[in-house]
Length: 89
Image 1 (spheres, rainbow, N blue to C red):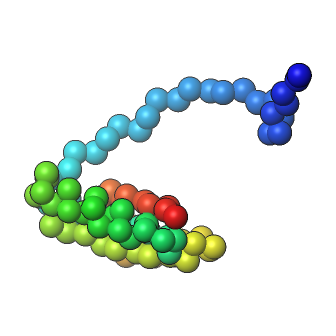
Image 2 (image 1 turned 180 degrees about the vertical axis):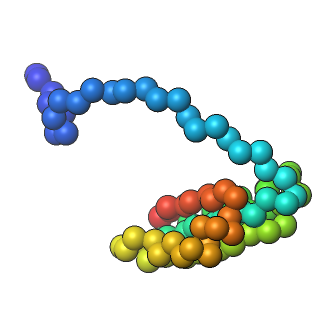
């Protein structure tokens, strides 16, 4: 039996990960959730862990419609040092 990849032929290229930014109490974390079930629950857990483990106190939440691109406002982008995104079901 022959198995065919429905994506066609492709080449995998390895790339290094972006360097991680240091985080601490003064970091502002953006939390971006689509409106699928439990995305906000997952990010709530992420927020609590960042508060407990790193002392972070500044969070900006953005919720988006799951079927549309995120409306990333200039304020959200400029206010956040890092962003965590959750897509859940």
